[in-house]
Length: 353
Ligand code: DAH
Image (cartoon, rainbow, N blue to C red; front, side):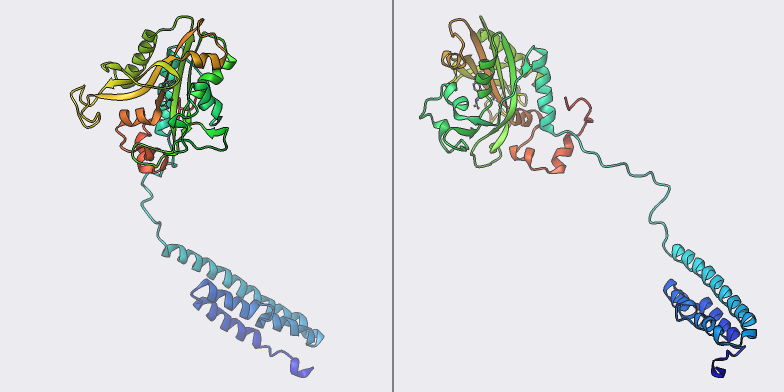
């Protein structure tokens, strides 16, 4: 046992070394190493305390006391030095910026330009007494073509234009099928608009996209005239583009209205004298329209001798492009924030309705 007797000067010697090492430790890691060296499971103080048990009984209390005092001193020193080092570390990293600048506000999106145009178009027609009707994007050939008086060999049915799912089912190429769907379920008088997405098997270019929006309009009653069509269409065009717009109907063929026409408005760029917007024509084509064909009434289950009606259809991207000077239809779906942001001039309030 005698070789295990602790030299009474040993605690003091350890303390001296520890104080020096701790004071000189200049990183948190170095300090931790010192803690382990003296107070760790196999640390010098820990070992020393352990060997107290092997000392003569009468010496144990005094020796234990001395070693515990050294231990406490080292613990205190370690703590103080750690605080010092921690505050030095903070001082080394200055606040990254000017704390007096105002903070950044949260990132906020805005309504898509098409959403806003659709809202404006809808508001104009709601004001004229139209209500909203909807139909499916995945449509039957029957509603998209047959009931709209498209003969079986009509070129619009060609695979070039239509995405067929099978022989009878397709992605609608126009919003006109909603006319027949709505008439099947409702009796005149009726006045509806039906905006929605349509699909065409087109190669994309600045004025063609394989999916875009159209809006159909339909008014049926006992004596609806071409004059009524002209009236509503003109009111819409003037409300949307400006009160000085002139409107003209140009004969054109569509299978489901008779007579049918394309509607032009006077160019807002040049007021009719010819510019880039209108391709020097002075007029801009806005929509297709006409009086509902008796065949379509029959398909819908209406008596064509009892009712008359008009219908019209327009491309929403097209009128948005004209009004806001957008040069390429593909921009609407490209999700380029630089483009979209230009139109975030108002908050969402009132846009989602
Ligand atoms: N659906 C036609 C198109 O996609 C547009 C159209 C023309 C709609 C005449 C109509 C109409 O309601 O009467 O080109």
